[in-house]
Length: 129
Image 1 (tube, rainbow, N blue to C red):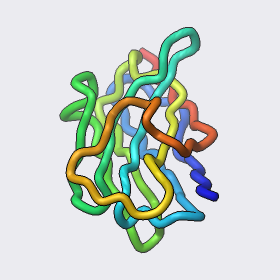
Image 2: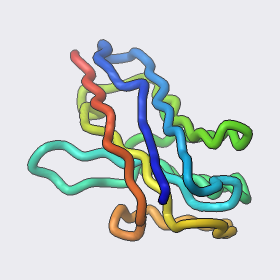
Image 3: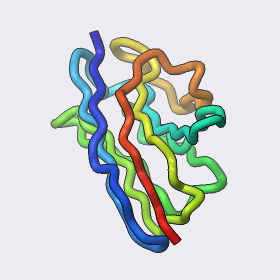
Image 4: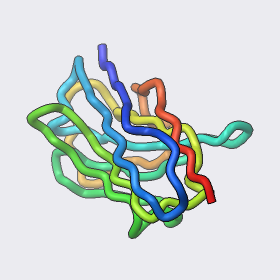
């Protein structure tokens, strides 16, 4: 069973930075798709950034491109989301997700939340103006 545990959320002022962490257990992340998603109450969950952990390729939502960076530490089965130049509209619950169980090596990972099988409990990010 895959377990994903997010941490690193909090409250910051606009322009500030946060780094979210996602610790994975139960399945290797050395070759899989890992993603960060976010959701505001009353709105659909949206893809923020996804990473092919086997190929290193990434995708970013246009709203965060140039400000957020997704990365991995395979030795510790951890995926990060570095968030810089935060804006009030980045306020949301952020979730980490894994695409499938086991090894899945692809250069292009899906970005739609519905395609991801395993989810963490989420970590809240609040950006004030």
